[in-house]
Amino acid sequence: MKKIKNQVWEWEVINDIKAIWLRPKDEITEREYKDFYKTITKDTSDPLAYSHFSAEGEIEFRSILYVPRAAPFDLFEDYYGVSSALKLYVRRVLITEEFTDLMPKYLNFVKGVVDSDDLPLNVSREQLQQMKMIKVMSKKLVRKTIDMLQDLAEESYEYEDDEEQDGEDREQDPTPQDDGDEAQADDDEEDKYDVFWSNFGKNIKLGVIEDSSNRNKLAKLLRFHTTNDEEELTSLDEYISRMKDDQDTILYLPGDSKSAILKSPILKKYTSHGYEVLLLADPIDEFTVQHLSEYEKRKVKSIAKDDVNLFDNTETAKEKQKKLKEMYKPLTDFFKKHLGRQVERVTISNKLEDAPLFILTSQYGYSAQMEKINKN
Image (cartoon, rainbow, N blue to C red; front, side, top):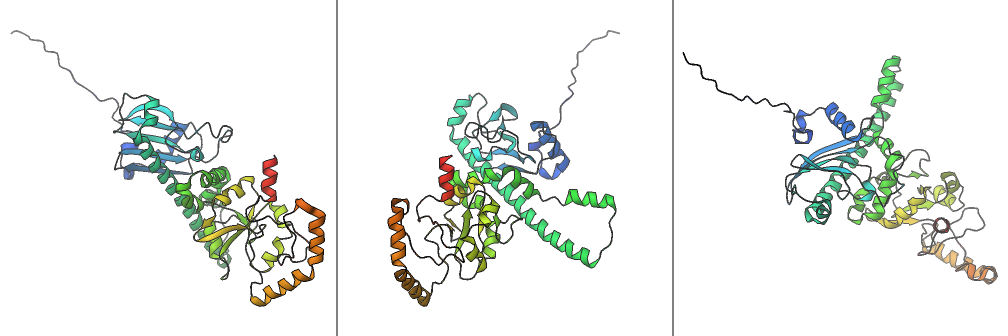
């Protein structure tokens, strides 16, 4: 019997694992998302939030975006020289490890991957930068990132409500917890948006200044201390919900520090009349609110400006104020003559409670805080 030898090839797929961003979301566990984040960033901590999505339309692409738990030490060292570095893939082929044209500067903390089948493989980085498709991708990525942060803020709001309810339940049923249960509760009850704000709040403020197309959405993410609660941060929406019926303006007062602002003589009358005031202690805060001249159809103004007056606006009060100005005209004229060009005008004010005087800023002039910043 004659033997015939035939060579037969058998192929075995060694790597049958799909890229995580190509898999359906319902098939991916939270642990897998977190492990993938650590793989691409070399971070040892889990991310605060992530967003996995597919975009369709002018250009189709898939992406996973992450918000880190902590800010890098050099986040603002070269702010205008470095942007968010996303990993760009084209048909599962890595094109560049750090493609900086997909995200604006203020989102330079966002990490993740972007994969598109519509971009050409044989293209240089310079050509990519000029492509219209990149701008379309950028808009969608920014929108998805802001939506992710809004979801994080809403979770924080729900967490606060749950915490208040838990506090009431503990008062009603003071059952002691096991130490292990308390440790687990501390991990589960972390307010993630507070963690985000402490690390990346300044980025959101810069976004309000720089990104006019998304300014209103970013404004919803802002948090400030107020005279209502000097320790807890509050959103502009929460501020509006507590506004007085006769109030149509969001009020703020800038200063060097929270304690210095609270000692301001002009603040006393507003608080005694029940008006809540935002305390802007960060140097960038005033720049931010100046770009946010209006929010939810309400003006945003500083009580240190001479065009803000919420007191005694009745006809009787105005007549009384007019008589006081005439009565003290010799005194105000003396001070104006003595101070000369150092002041624009000297007048009687109804904004002070018990302080003898206060230096107000004209409607379109620099505030004292802005002058300090510009001099530095």
